[in-house]
Amino acid sequence: MKNNKIFTLIILLTTLFTVQAQKKMKIYISADMEGVVGAVTGDQLGPGGFEYERFRHFMTAEVNACIEAAREAGADEILVSDSHGNGENILIEKLPDDVMIVRSWPRPLGMMEGIDESFDGAIFLGYHASTNSKEGVRAHTMSSANITSVKINNIIMPEAGINALIAGHFGVPIILVTGDDIAVKETQNLIGNIEGAVVKMAISFHAAKTMTPEASYKLIREKTKAAMKRIKQFKPYTLKGPLTLELSLKNYRPVEMLQYYPGVERISSHTIQFVGKDIIEISRFLRFVTGYNIALKP
Image (tube, rainbow, N blue to C red; front, side):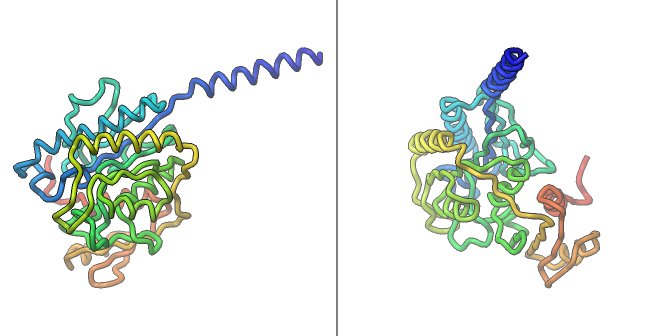
C-alpha cells in the first residue's frame, strides 16, 4: 500500500511538471506611435501627414524588433494591439504569420483590448508622456484635443498608467516601455523599475533629439531580451477599488452634459468625477466619454 501511494505521488508530480513545462509564454504588445523613433509632429502621425506612410513602416519595424527578441527569449504566443489614432497603422502583412493583431475602435479595454490572465507580461511600444507633463514629445492622455488631466485615486495617470492598471487587473505585469526619455521616466516612476528603451530625447512638444530607425530597433531588441530575462521579477500594477476617476476637459459643454450621466459628479467648471468598482468599469466609461458621438455611423 505504501509503495502504491509513493507511485501515485510520483505520477502526480510528473504530470504537474509536464503541464508546467508545456505552458506557453504569452506576451502582449500595445503599440502607440508618438513614441516611435523620429516621430515629433502630426506630419508623421496621421494619414494626412506627408511622412505618415514612412512612419507606419518604422512603427511596424519596432513592433517586429520586439516580437523577434521576445521569441528569442522564450515567448511562444504574441498579441499586438494597434493602439494609435485610427488603430490601423501597423502594416499587418509585415508581421509574422502566427501573430494576431487588434485593430480599430471601439474596444472596451482600449489600448489593452484582448489582454487576459493567460499573459505573462505586457510591453508598451512607442508610448508618450501624459497630458500633465510639461516636457514630453506630443504629451497627452487619450485626447490632446479634449482632455487636460486624468487622475485615478488622485494619481496623475498617463495612458501607460491606465493601461498598466488594466493589465494589473488580470495579474499581468508591464515589463518594458519604449518612447522618449520623459515618457519612459514617467512610466517607470509610476509603475516600478521596468525596462525602458529611450529612442529619442524630448526637446519640446514638437522637437526631439532622436536615434535613427536601425539604432532604435537594435535598442528595442536588447531591452526586450533584458525584460524577458527579468520577467519573473515584475509585479502587476494595481490600485485597490473602488477607483475614483477625475477627468478634466478643455471645454465647458461636455462637462455640463456628462454630469447627467448616472454616477458622474461635476466637481469644477471643467472636471467631472466618476467612481468605478474597478479599472474595467473606469475603462468602459473613458471609452464612452472619448468615443461617443450621436452622429456616429453606421
